[in-house]
Length: 330
Image 1 (cartoon, rainbow, N blue to C red):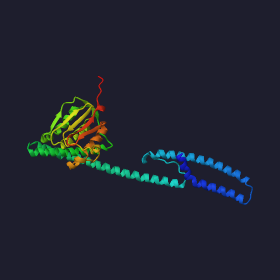
Image 2 (cartoon, rainbow, N blue to C red):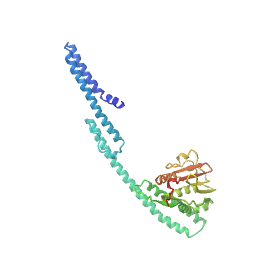
Image 3 (cartoon, helix red, strand yellow):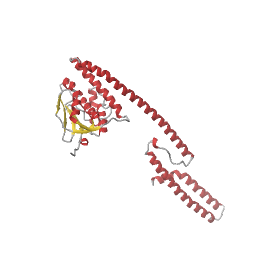
Image 4 (tube, rainbow, N blue to C red):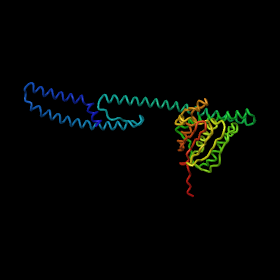
């Protein structure tokens, strides 16, 4: 009904002109005192065929409307042909649409090429910078002093930032290096914890961890990346106390700490890109990228990530393992 009323409004001018001509024709017969009967029959016949034409034209109008509704749901790249134009104006509009589509495609291609070039450059840069980092690590390993330990810790942080850059670039890449297989979760956690051993020792943070004896199906490298980002945040915002790794009753891998916690008003946004909230005011170097990357990677892995926190009491990040539980039939 809404479509029909819209159609009538669109054709109202033509309908009124037709009615006006009919009235003028009949009025002329009346003014000249001519017999009215001969004009009534052709007028009624014209109105009858006019209504038939109106109905036929509306059916055609509706088909075109339905076709355009389907096209509206497509992307510009998928629009190959619009409904046939019924007027010069419609044809002009269609030509404008195709010109805009062509310009949009060219602009998108240029933007994609710039993004690809930028991604390639930073990927090469990230891989190249690993060489001097590895060289410095080897040099610092030859001595054991407070200064060398502090420099090693800072160098490890640089290495983490490089890994974050690579992870960020790979997330939107068309190519993927995800390899899903059965992994021992204890092996993943131990490898990740070992990297942070100097930070645990230097800050005198206690690690509470008992073997979990659990296998999961996931991508080993990317799952380890998530665990390391969570451990990095825990150590960054924990001044004293402990970091605990365990599996709760709901089959969540939990990494909890006794750090500064997260303000309640910040909790709904902690996985947003660039959001730092209260922690950003405490630590000006916070980028708000770590948890965002964790969320993106977890989405790709099919792992649900959630957080619980209490200000000045600590934070627990939970990775649900239910969908990765290995069912053995042997």
